[in-house]
Image: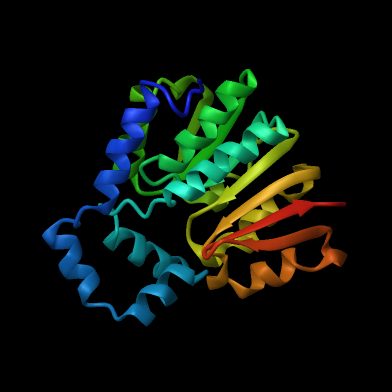
Length: 224
């Protein structure tokens, strides 16, 4: 038996994944409908603050969650590597964070630093962390990740999850890079929307080995 597969977390995750599949509010649906699919991708992938804030503001009620398979992958990576120090960019309602925290709990403890600039989502995430019995492992910082992740980080980071504004992946990596030890893992959701990030982690000369995993995840490892 594991934290991931037993109460209180397992039924909570079942409910959250079901809610993630449900239609959004009429207001959110109408607002997003005004954008073409290309515009949605462009805004979410932009490194321009006004662009990504506009997109994530429109999607403030949307889960934008990792898939169930990706959640399980996160748990497996944490457990298999013995990770105890994790940084996450993009909390949303906390589904991915809960998977990471379950792995840390089953590893014997540790700390997750996660960040979310949409205040209403951060509040909901905190409720979910408490309901899942994992709040004691999670430090949720509110605000722009370029500020919240620029200070007071763990000296050693075992795993990073990138799942916020795609255009910020390179900048966030730069903030964290010196704390990544050889063997540290990077998991980047929808990294195909940020070619600059993929070019960086797929180059051995930059100190990484990387491979696409499934349809929407890039899995990378620090090698130097």
